[in-house]
Length: 269
Image (cartoon, rainbow, N blue to C red; front, side):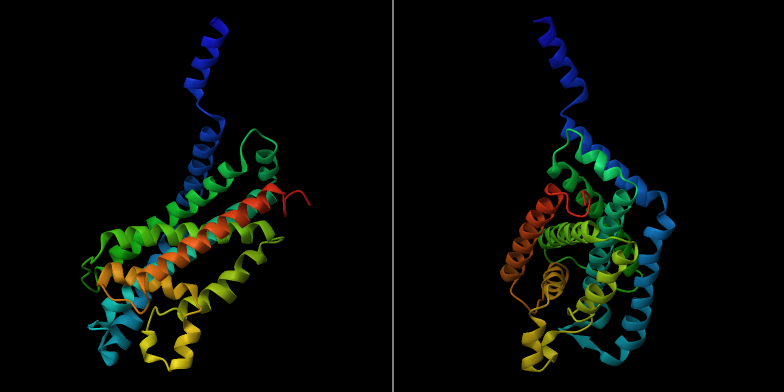
């Protein structure tokens, strides 16, 4: 009985190994990007400020209203989502590849930690950075326009879903990356074009019918418009459809990332 009591007390003091590991990974991830905040948090704010000045102030004066709103207010939701997508993806892809490069992942895989715990720890770190950057960009936008939230649930849920999804995609990129250059290929040649063509700066109603149909194949379009609905109350796509796509792709990405981690792809090779 005394041994059982000692075991229960030990479990009470130290908790489940997976829970302890999860908190450790999350704490490490947050400290990692917080320690170099000049490189991780300030650049997005400066970049978005330039977008606000160039596109919102200078070009926006010539464009006028869009969707019944001032052009500056129209592009703000898209720019916030752009920062969420970029930072959640980059944070996890670079961090996991760094762990592979430093052989930290191998130590985690042979420890009594579940693969789900490792994956969720990295994803939570990416979500934390994305949310922090989103708050910073939102605060910067208040110097240029006035934001009135139309649907707070849509704002919060879309932000979290988007950051989770692109953190998972960043994790997959980190798994397959074999050198540091591989981390920047997807953001440069895939994410950036999709973001610019995803309705951040324009409504797809302005496009010809054919190109509007093509634009609907872009997943970023649903992210941007769902978030824009939360802020302004307008959207070029069905909100239900946007949630359906986001949730489906997020679940699929989670299963793929977990499968890759379970079989040791890019780690045990």
